[in-house]
Image (cartoon, rainbow, N blue to C red):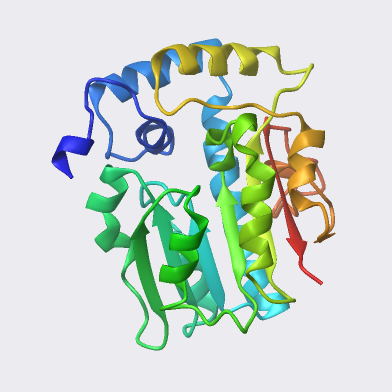
Amino acid sequence: MRARIVTTQPHTARIWNYWLGGKDNYEVDRAAGDQIRQLHPGIGEYARADRLFLGRAVRHLVGEVGIRQFLDIGTGLPTADNTHEVAQRHAPDARIVYVDNDPLVLAHARALLTSTEEGRTDYLDEDLRNVDAILEHAAKTLDFSRPVALILLGVVIFIGDDEDPYALVRRLMDALPAGSHLVLSHTVTHPEMPDVDEAVKFWNEHGTPKLTQRTPEAVARFFDGLDLLEPGVVSCSRWRPEHTNGAEPEEVAMFGGVARKA
């Protein structure tokens, strides 16, 4: 595992951790993160908006929908309010399977495996592309005859168009029963946010893994065939925001949505 952790090249999970105020990153990650922030000063807000979106989506699914099972792929480094913490706070019997292929995430996986006595958490060191392996392992913890929430936050951006990311998401959702939900977020390219494109260009020249930006319309395609919950696919900061005092939150170039499988 140590051999898989490259400390001489910036890595997206560690930079994300840096922007969220975490300590699981290296000098090379902080330097790259600062350079990206110079190109796009609001980039740190994306990380926070994505994390808050996760919390609101999980609370809705547990409290309003009654979901008790979560398959979280592209988990990232543990921070505050991980999926199992939010879910089990409201439903102690919730079960969560985390999936990531970053060796540093694996090294910290024990922080993701804390659970209530009533519930359960598990972690799989696997790539999103290996759908069959993920489903086989997850079935040891999750009951696929009951609804599952599939969480894909900021992970399909690492799947190029030549790999058909839409087919990957469909295969995962096809394995889940009616009543299951998809929670997905994705960095977008937008005419009104040109500095985002510059930041992504810099990242793809210096960091790993490479990113594929998509338009908001292309992100919405991931939900084809599913029933989108209101307000649809929007800036993560604007998906059912809380404590806004009536003001619409500032838009960020991280779009997300939640949809139900009929």
